[in-house]
Amino acid sequence: MDNERLEQRIRDLAEHAAPDKLGDVLAACEQDARKGTIIDMNTEVKKKRNHFVPIIAAAAAVALICAAGFIGYGFGRNTAPTEDSVIMLDVNPSVSISVDDAEKVLAVTALNADGSIVIGDMDFTGSSLDVTVNALIGSMLLNGYIDDITNSILVTVENGDADRAATLQSRVTELVNGALSSDGLQASVISQTVTQSSELSALAQQYGISEGKAELIRKVVALDPTLTFESLVGLSVNDISLIADSRSLSDSTVTQTGSASDKGYIGEDAATAAAYEHAGVSSADVSYSYVDYDSENGIMVYEVKFIAGGVEYEYDVSALDGTIVKYERDQSGSGSLTQTQSGDYIGEEAAKAAALEHAGLAESDITWTKATFDRENGIMIYELDFITADSKYDYEVNATTGEIVKSERELRNTGAGTGTAAPSTTAPTTTTPGSGTTTTPSTGSAAGDFIGEAAAKSAALGHAGVSESDTYQMKVELDRDDGRYIYEVEFKAGYMEYEYEIDAYSGAVLKAESDYDD
Image (cartoon, rainbow, N blue to C red):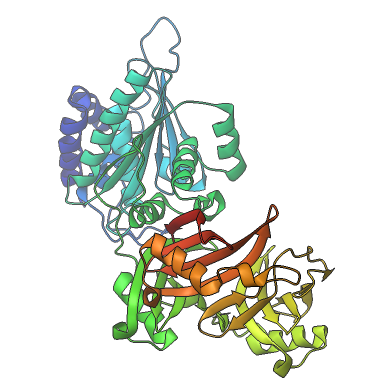
């Protein structure tokens, strides 16, 4: 780009963002005979490939072109200015802008390494907030941090005066939106205000992020307890927004314009197809399905849940390339199986063999009730549960070495436990593959006076308004609670899970709970 064209673009930008300083900018450029740095906007950026470099990227050049320009001019005050507000901009680069009550910039600070790249050699001291925001957004665009694939930015305003903070939040949001959309970029701007606190500062410092991002993550986790702070902290604002949007999470204190871009990911349809193919089912076999975004060990995944043939499946599919990261298959009475694609693990069958050898049992002696693959305390393990005629066994096997990490055995007929298991208070349990878990009364109870499992199940289904043919993972257990015999009935139907306590003598519903199945 030649100097004349670049100057015209700066002129257009300055007229829009800070008309009162246009003369200062151009005069400084003339006086310096363009001794500052001119960025070649066609040069490939080393940070990452920029998929969308709009004209507004020239905003970053305002400070870089004119080393002695208006950025860095003196305040002209007799007294030292004091900080009135702090504005934080988070994409993955994080920067904070400190301004006085006249919205003149006191300092711009990088809050992480990428923030330092965005600021570069620019000195914003004394510049207006308008020009500073435009220059920072331009630098983020030019360095490839914002484009049509990663289009979300978080604006956070910190000010002790709530009305002042809200006004500034609205104005900065408008500035950012204007800078990003001036050449057609469909941006998503998320904005909020925060109140400074030692707790928030400590949280931000602990994870090495801005207070604004810490507050956003804290709000998202509060709305969905299945998410954790640790699972979100390493993600970009765009990815956090995708997760929140997919789960319909909203907070009245957070404002969002536009939608986070998902162009960098394969899409829900492709993720669902990958899960179906791996499970060996067709879409015609599926009675229920659900997809949302999640994070698994710092990478974005689609969490795909579906039911086919009475079996419940849960898959984590890489959002980038469709790789199966993790999966589970759960069928009441016949167990659940989980595996990953890595060849470094011993495999489910070897883990089962190690558990049976440790227990001194043969395959013919037991019935598998659970087999899952998961991370525990930083290592991958197989969680294995199985039963015999008189005992229940729980094992954890190191997925890499085959070492027995944990073993428990619980007697099913007397309640006496061995190993690390706690004593059981439940009645004997028998399992019928494919039809749920049922129980018989414990020794010494007046079994003939109980209504029976079928009646207890019928009472729960009637209360829930659900047909037994629509349920799966049905489980009925006779238990003693505070000296009273009850049937505990649990089942799932559609995307809901139900838990009931039924009086074992009268059939009265003592407790009923229902919730969305996570």
